[in-house]
Image (cartoon, rainbow, N blue to C red; front, side):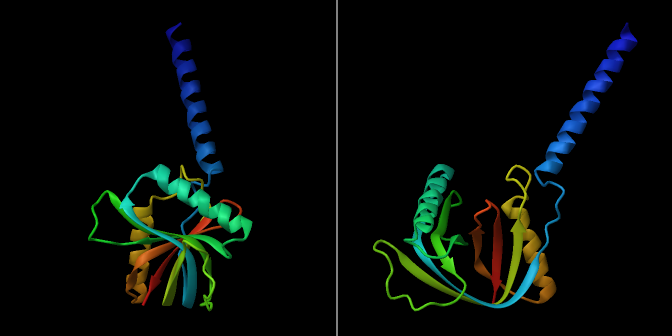
Length: 179
């Protein structure tokens, strides 16, 4: 009787391990994080800037609002979030810019009311495509660390911001720009 219980317990544990492994695999957990290095890049971003105490719910609402603006055509380009490294704000605060970007400097004469624009240039861009589900993708701190190591290998100095570009298939890419 005791042996039968042990056998059932082993079978249950084995099934749970197989289910966990297959779920992790299905969500993209085993996909490698590859850093692509690209040369000179320019980008214009039209959107809204926020410096505030960080709340995920507010941040998500702002991304959804910007997505609606991009989908409606009011903002032209790709949904983009820029995170700025800002040491002058508290540890629980964030400095970010949400809007739509285009990969070249455009003559920005007509910016919709309530929006501003920023122009960026870089000599080198370090880009990572994030296709994994959010439950299994690497944490932003880990991604930043990987890019920092790659930048050092390339002899580049990263600028104090990063881009997240959101694609229609719900994947996104992260870019760090270097001088």
